[in-house]
Structures are given as C-alpha cells and as structure tokens.
Length: 56
Image 1 (cartoon, one colour):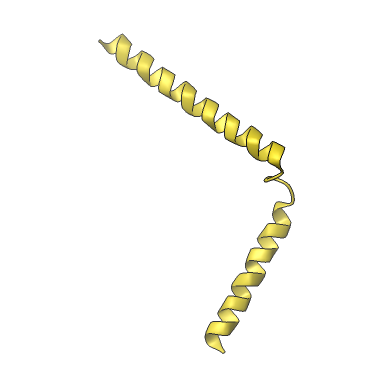
Image 2 (spheres, one colour):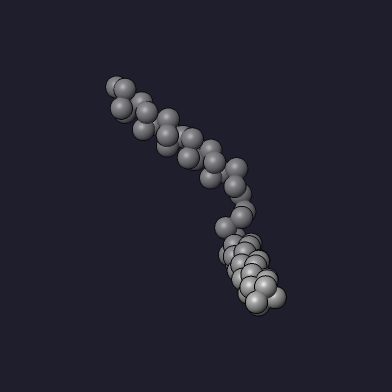
C-alpha cells in the first residue's frame, strides 16, 4: 500500500514539474519574460498617478 501511495505522489510531482517547465518555455517563447524592468517602471508610474488623484 505504501509503495502505491509513494508512486502516486511521485507521478503527481513529475506532472507538476512538467507543467512548470511548459509554462516557463511558453513564457520565454512568447516574449513574456523580456523587458521586465520597463513593466516595473510603468506600474510604479501608474501607482504614483493613482495616488496623486486620490490625494488631490
């Protein structure tokens, strides 16, 4: 019984790892991981504008 549960957990772990690898490859191939600094600065700018509108 223990071997069956251990095998099942191993299969689930392998499938989760494969899903994570596929997500990474898809993100890298689609360009989602390029120019992260630009996105970060755009978010900060939008938050600053939002805060200014709330206070003013």
